[in-house]
Structure formats: C-alpha cells, structure tokens
Amino acid sequence: MKARPLLRVLMREPLSYRIVRQRGSHRRLESAMGFPPLLFAFHDKATVRSGLIRAVLVESVGLTEEKAKELL
Image (tube, rainbow, N blue to C red; front, side):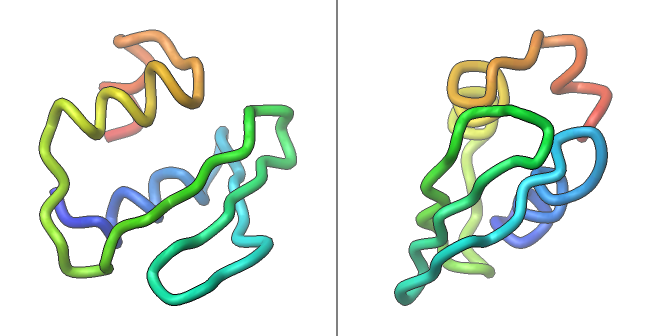
C-alpha cells in the first residue's frame, strides 16, 4: 500500500484524524474521536510494508486486527 491511501484511511470515519502540523513529509495527526496522536512520516508515493501498516493501525491507534482489516 502507498502512503497516501494509508493517510486517507486514517483521515476518514471512524478514525477522523486530521493534520494539525506539517514539516516536510512529517505530519502530526490528531483524532477528533479520541484516538492517540500520530506522527505520519512517509512520502506520499512511498510503499508502506504490511507489517508497518499493522503497527500503525493496531499498536499506535489501538484498533483490533479485525477492525483494521475492515478499514483497509
């Protein structure tokens, strides 16, 4: 998966993250739904490995594996 579609997944419902600050390719994301803040540090066209996608959605955001798969 590319970084831009992953960012779109984070920004749509039910996660509702939004970019609050950006410096280069580093974006600080905060959620209106109470999820923890994230630092998204990927270039838009970079390929993100599946293990890293899992780490972002399950470990950083706190979703279950099933819910993360539904969002993708």
